[in-house]
Image (cartoon, rainbow, N blue to C red):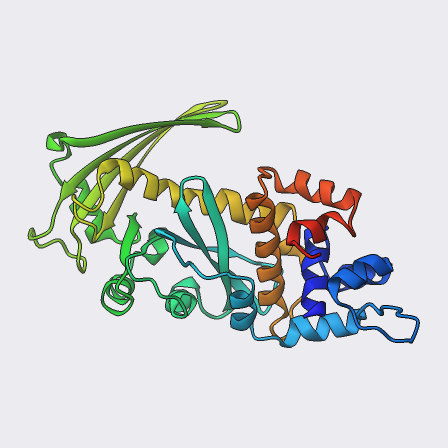
Length: 336
């Protein structure tokens, strides 16, 4: 357990690699090592920090599922789970990583789990593997257009007793054409939503139509949505996307559909961006055994911990932790 606490504390302090975690441990004062439960090696009570080799073996060999469970990376109590994938060109032999992000309400979002996808396949094949460990009863799973697949919809509704909210684009030509041809001018259920941030103003109008019983060519489809987005920053853009869900109009109003749609956009900006820019995950040289998965879990744990403490800028929070790297991370972890 002390090795795990050392790894968590070091990553919260900004460590990005086994070597950095080992260096943090070597530099830790006796008071910090005592709080972390490092073993005593002499009658004088001297604490010995775990070596970089010990830390590397632990992260490489510990079961990713056990580590995720230990760090509470399961979507318990969430109402929405956003799933997304991202290209990892430098992390051979892994081509993509799939990420799951659980959401309890609009203020709280946690990066829950990541699964690496072998280079000769794609994210679709690992969708079920990513979500299989979780009890998703009643959870709304959102995903981008790549995952708008009939088998995945059946897996969620029939096997996991969950709900789906998928984006529909040109990769599903027949379904996309069906949605475009619907009588949207007659849609009375609408919700306008306006947000501002990062120098950008976005207005989103969501229209919803009930399609259950109309023979929509998609399993368990109950509602479809048309989302028109207007963005203004240095230039003005307009985008129209469609969505499909098994949620009925009673279960999801246009306002809730707007929130669900925004949750999928959030995983890209709050998780991918932070992990790539702040933790330089794309450039990570950790590639052996379970190392990539477990380091991803440690980074996710650090992000979630910092956000739970009220930090909105993870990079700034890591700098703040680094000012007192052997006290502030341990305080944040609640280690006495």
